[in-house]
Length: 422
Image (cartoon, rainbow, N blue to C red; front, side, top):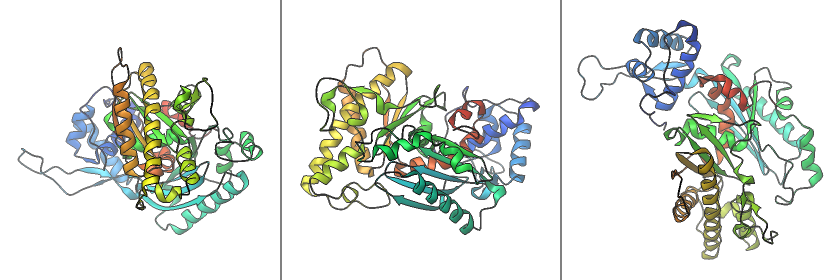
């Protein structure tokens, strides 16, 4: 399920100095997470650490129950004693993820390998702060009380994710402006952390989806990439040098605000020649409104959960979906080209709260639209369909404590909203 890392490079090199033992521990944990499992000799080869250093660190992490040994396996073409693969211990640590969305709330508990142990989900028309925080605290209590496997010493933290500008675009989600504007005076991280004894992280929801893909999806194939997530509104995340990049204001990858020619808009209220934001061209809310106007249930035609099989789609609904995909793909291609011109990315991962078939079709048509554009002077990025889906944001939130702990450069990841940040 986890992609095998690339050959050793400047982003995976370790150090044999004793003063950086914690750095090397995080490096090895990160490497094993990406690979799934790996013998100590392979860890030493990729990190360039000495065999003695790797053995000392791995033994320490085994004692801490963060790692576990797997059955011996013989490497191809080698003779002698088979190697013992080392893997993450699923019960070694746990984390809680909370996703506050414009249409719903998700709270889940994951183990160290990213497997969801328990979850709860709530739907609403728009987020009312008092109700949202009440549900969050009730769900955290439920997760910790009902999970006998969960010990406070093994709970590394809580990751909360939400759109940074939750009060914006009230018209698009048909919400009272006064209710949404009340979020402007709320420090979400502090509100959740008020009665918790573990660290609480906070990050933008699309950035969190990028974190989930880095740990569980296809994102590890690129050192420099753009992650696009099509939720109620489209958003994104940026990876540079194999590490999440959040920018000066923790808002890197906010592609939903990119200007797009107005004729690409799918919002009927847009008119004129003034550019519109990508949000009005490639967001799920537009597809939902078009389906609802035609008399269809959007959740039945394009379910958000990938565990729910889509129902047979009538021809009329299929035309609406295909029309939305086509226009969204054209506008996403413009956004990708603009991003490639600034960052020089290797790849783009497109995912969202959509069925697998829709994500794959959207990726295919975006790829075609990108090829049809004028790419002179640019290196064309590779496009790939994401595989995490609707849970990516809540999963990414839950993975923030793990990701922060695994990242060799912790100073960089403090910018993802670690303890003490809003």
